[in-house]
Length: 126
Image (cartoon, rainbow, N blue to C red; front, top):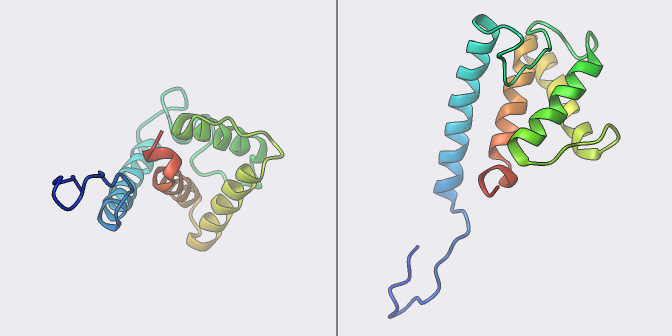
C-alpha cells in the first residue's frame, strides 16, 4: 500500500490478489446481469454486448457478425480494434465458441467474452 516513509518510501501500485478477486467478482456479476438484460429486454439498436447479433445465434450461424461484434467489444473495453487475422480475435472466437458449446446456451459465449475482457489487465489499467 501506501508508504509510511519510515520503512517504505515507494507506493506499490501493482494489482494485489485481493484487487484481482474483486475485479473477477465484479466482472462475473456485471456480465451475468448485462447478458440477462440484453437477451430479454433490449432491441438490436440499444444492445451493447450483443450488438446486432441475435441472442440465440451460435458462431456457425453468424460468424461474420460475431467477429465484427468481438472486434467492436475489444475496441470498447480495451481501446484496441482487432483485425480479422489477429491472434487476439482468434482467442476471443475460441472462448466464445467453447463457452457456447460447454453450456449449450448461445448467450454463454457472450458472458464468457465479457468476463474475459473485464478481467484483462488492459481493461482495469486503460
